[in-house]
Image (cartoon, rainbow, N blue to C red; front, side, top):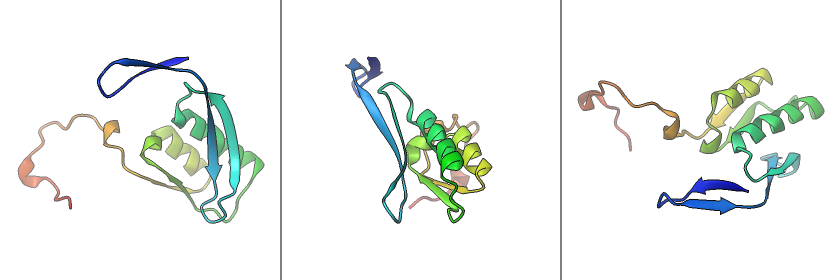
Length: 111
């Protein structure tokens, strides 16, 4: 059992397990899998999956690991770099600190 806060700030309790999968983008085959308690952070599961892929399934043709914004963590990037690959990860603005002395006049234009 684990606890998380919902959008209203109230505690919700969860029971169960999670299945974490590393899937090939072109083949759609499951390359590695991990079954864990529901409270395991996805980022920690990603590192374990990446290490298993590197040890058990050496893929010489893979150049990139594609991850969503939930995996925007430095240890994951380090593991991917250790494997000799590059990461394509969606940006997660929650991992940034607060901007200090931010000048709106020189802010980048976003479309």
